Length: 373
Image (cartoon, rainbow, N blue to C red; front, side, top):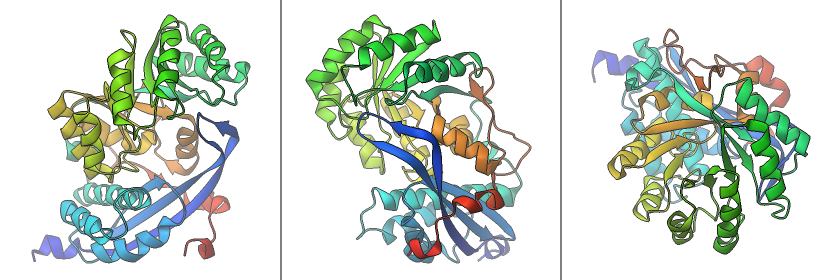
């Protein structure tokens, strides 16, 4: 083993979980929630520490510090592909999707942060910058919001943050959705309007809504039906009004999930989430698949963690500036990006992804160790 490799062997891996209340009750087409769980991972090698995280259940902490830690411990921190493959094999009998994929994602992003820090360069520079700024779109507009709440949130993204597009949730009360869409359209003027049903509709329901939404110039219809319904998404893509794109992919956990949506011609824009799809390594793999299929890619949620890899992805269209995650990232991470003129930009003067976890500020939200077993 080379001198560099021996001094960069992984010698520590730590995980902690935090449950952060939302700033009010929130709902979408298929779910209600009042808190978000953040799982943070630190990896040590060569005298440096890398950090990654995911939004998932606190139970994955024991998976991270158990089988996955054993898979990467004493491996060369520069050999991220080797670590990633070892982690995939470690969860073979558990199932690679879902919580296991989220756990791997957190470790992988920590390893990429660590590698860039060991080289003392920004992660975007290590990956290769195709762009210096990444467009964002405002995302929230929860179905339980009053019209005034909806109007204020969407208009703030358009005016304060300069977002050229905003997204609202639909589907929990379909009878109210047409009126809510009209409120949103009036609030944002000529900005693009996106809607997200979170798989709440049947194909026939989604097609009826799409016909109405076209009148309000809705340009993006996300998960009109379940993302598991590839044929339903394909039908939506074939029959949606001109100018309305079909998007899905936030539940991509493996490259096979992405391939299924792309080969099924199910989406106009594929989404992927670095906290779910296998981390930076997984996101780059999905990005390559999008390039091969000539389909644009959009980053789902966790904008601070996506920022550097989004600078490198060839067909990256934009990132989701999701209300909950933006709030958490600014609350608990030093270096979280600020939206300016509808975009966020990496600080290339900070090594790694430029984020530092505020452990002291996070203590009040910590999930007790007894609940992490």
